[in-house]
Image (cartoon, rainbow over all chains, first blue to last red; front, side, top):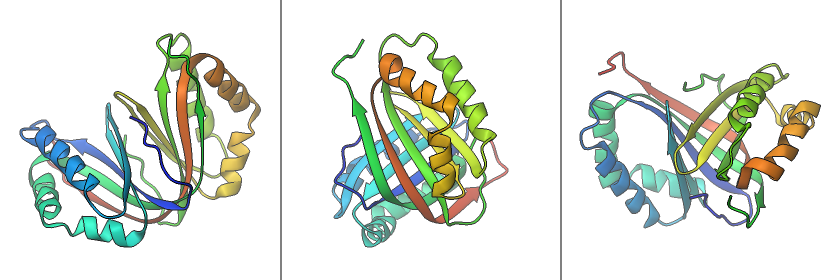
Length: 109
Length: 109
């Protein structure tokens, strides 16, 4: 789903990744981390898609919330496993959303 | 591909979208716009993935480059067609990348 957010400014953590061939346990961990992120203070929303590469964007109220989520103990374990088992590479970009606009139509086909 | 970028700061345009069922002409236009964006002054890179939603991120040197790309005549036509034909909704978020880090391994399976 496209995430709905308060007015800017807020923060976006852009996580782009390439997976290794062996993805055992990855989907379960990704789902678990998405749920856990939602419980964090300052969490605003989440969007993800995967084709050749995966792109996951989590949205946060401020930099302190991002830092707290980075240091969450369950998340630290997931990050460790991610490096050891699942990711051949990833980029993380911390960005401040300055402007946002949207287009919606009720028509769906 | 995961885009490789200069050191922050730079800008990311986060475009998340839901497509209508009728996608005639969409893939061709998306490919054309990706190629055209690459020729713009200030263009730094592009990443995209689509599952339930589509996420496309274009990276730019500064806000002026983003404005110029927004007003490019071929791109304006694509934006018009996008609203009329292809998108049931989209969000555009202009964000300033403040920090970036990456992980790479040579292991691919």
